[in-house]
Image (cartoon, helix red, strand yellow):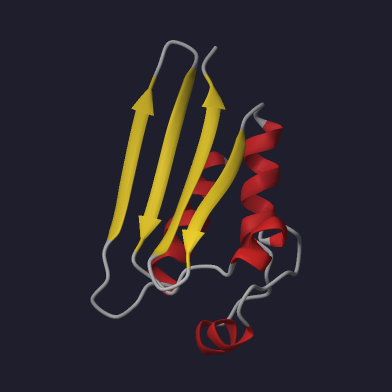
Length: 108
């Protein structure tokens, strides 16, 4: 399931990136948790949409979704998987500058 969640994050970063944009992936460990970051140089997510971006069937930008496809389920699945493993996922984004998704998992 975790592999599925990571694939969704990577797929979104690639699909919603701008032409020639970069995708950066990071993985850090502390004594208590692992933190995965996936960042892109895409269009970004409007501030008004950030609170709903992980809701099932929600699509922040209809014009982008029509171009790249999708049902608005990927990020909802990502959230459920990480939360099901005792972690969580969040996003920071600025329109025109891209998005960074951060997923955290506790280490046992």
